[in-house]
Amino acid sequence: MSTAGPAPRRRMRADARRNYERLLTEAGAAFAERGTDASLEDVARRAGVANGTLYAHFPTRQALLEALLGDRMRALAGRAHELMDHPSPHEALLLWARAAVAHATAYRGLATSLMRAVEDETSELYAACRSVLDAGEHLLGRAQRAGVTREDATAADLYALVNSVAWAGEQTSAAQAERLLSFAMEGLRPLGTVRPARGR
Image 1 (cartoon, rainbow, N blue to C red):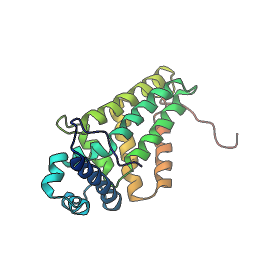
Image 2 (image 1 turned 180 degrees about the vertical axis):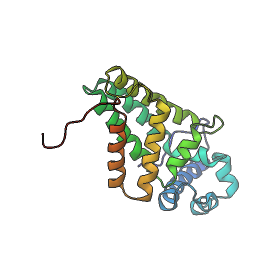
Image 3 (image 1 turned 90 degrees about the horizontal axis):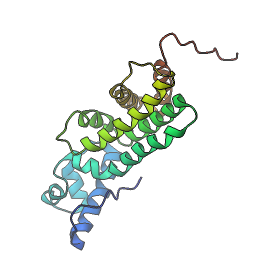
Image 4 (image 1 turned 45 degrees about the vertical axis):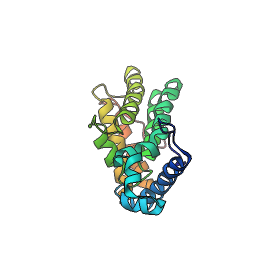
């Protein structure tokens, strides 16, 4: 996973740009090692800059996460739109949910951060989280119109489901997360739907 992040809005001097890139690289490494609660002061130390330099570029932990993951979250939203042409609405929803779980397990603790951010309009992650939620809503709506997903399910349900599976995967394993996701997605089928038994 690239840690380059999106280009800053303001043009930077060369030294400031180097600091920005080093901070992203070290933040990505620290979050991969210790999760999203890793010390930001340690990130600054590893990057060889003062704490003030870190906070000048990234005022909050959420701002740092957005810089690290913004491109991936936009790609995840884009993937939902691509899957709108998939011949199976339920399979498209499952494929996207699987990609969303993989994204939410990029760092330990990320699923919790994403769940908090989508409810907090002041978070720097809010816009990216909303774009993911809205993209999932399109796939969910298509599956509902096709009659393969229960009508009372909402995009918020899907977002919470994906992040809950990701959180459970952090505590167990990727294989267990995949099993839980499979069970959960079957649970989204319309009430009374009978699935054929294996081997028939």
